[in-house]
Image (tube, rainbow, N blue to C red; front, side):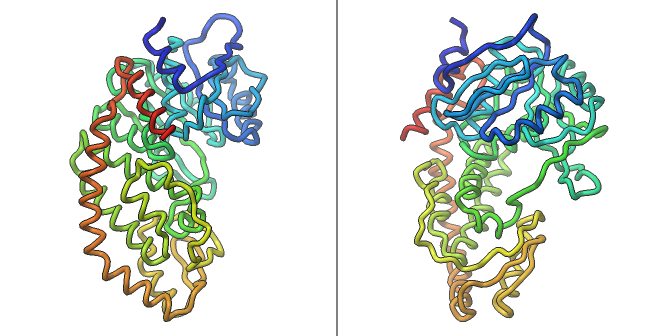
Length: 379
């Protein structure tokens, strides 16, 4: 029995090998949670000729049917793994199958050219991870500081032995952020400047996050957990954890989001992901923007003065009276010192939890990590 099979079996089931001919050097892995995105991915793969030079690995949510048209290994989640668990399992499976280069691809992320693919594979074949710049469709050019390893990321087999796999513990979101930080810390990441990935940016500001809290609040919890693990190799993330805890807690107070306060207190508690139906709606999101979240502080005063505001491309309308909103804003300001102390307590408690989990995860400790994550999902 191979060293990774018990870890893989802990998270995946019904693994089906439908590859044809000799195994190729490259595997392209994509999680499939929504079949509607697959036709776009298949069209891209065919147009770039990737189906001729790579095998594929797909991990599906329970209840979905395997896709056809590509030489692939198909596997199904044994339990809902979340994005982080799925990427962890997919990387383990590719490693177990012996691929020299693993390409992680988001189904709805569009690679600009075959030349970019080939260049990044060449970089990965030399022992470095490679990721192209990423931009939104409406952006004229890519931000040189924005590259996402899970949109189109290229990894040599050796990366998983030295730097490790993506960690599953964030559950939803931030696994790619932490992995990029870890690769950069190890000086194993090349941000490829000769090409780019096009992918829509969503939920980038406070208002879109709070308007769709069922989707995005778990991602906030994931980000907080990501900071905890980043702090193990970069102490500056202790400060980031406290700062972002206070930031999100402030807006949770303003917008009466007790659920988010619970998540900030204990981001490892997956039961807190459930959205309460009785939380009062303080604002209405008329239009969702994509700009950075830190542009929203001044918008609070615009809401107070005129009951409407624009922030980061979002358009917001107040859903409560201005006197009521003034009281909420005043309370949130008064609670800032309290939330700071709570952030420190949360940091200490959650760091202790994180320290008990296998990290970084390599082939040697992958089984322990998979078992710990499965236990976290069951609790």
